[in-house]
Structures are given as structure tokens and as C-alpha cells.
Image (tube, rainbow, N blue to C red; front, side, top):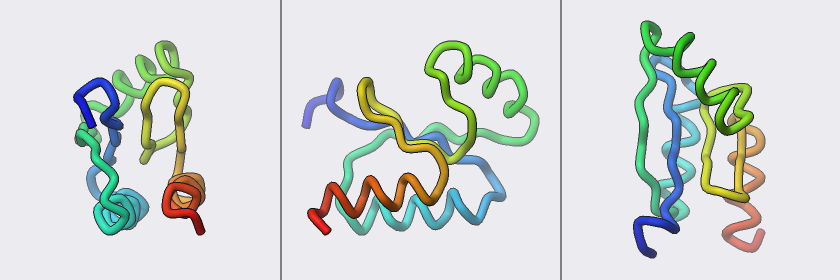
Length: 84
């Protein structure tokens, strides 16, 4: 996959859901770039993500035309990706 095709995974520090989602993505072999969001970044970054990409919650797996927000939706995406 080229850099254009790579997903961006927004990871919230200290979040068990982010840890679980990371494990799912790695086990599925999904190629992604991780953006780590800390508590001090989160308000400003979330405002930008909401405005620019219509993202509401973290963690989120994003690529244009593909967006999976939260552990539940990331799990659904991974299962679909793996053909389950």
C-alpha cells in the first residue's frame, strides 16, 4: 500500500479502547500511521478533527471514505476487512 492508501489511527493515551484497537489493527495486518493524542492536546485536536473530518470520538481509524470511530466500530471494520 502506498502512503496515500494508509489509514491514520488516532490513539488516545491512557485509553483501554485505544490499546484494544491497536492490538486488533496489528493482528489484522492493517497498515496505519498512529497519531497519539494526549490529554493536553485532546480538546484542541478534537475540535479540529470534528471540524475537518467530522470525527466525534477516539480512538478512530480514518482514511478518506473510510472512518471507524470507537472500539466497537473499529472491531466491525476489522472483521469486515478480514472477511468475517
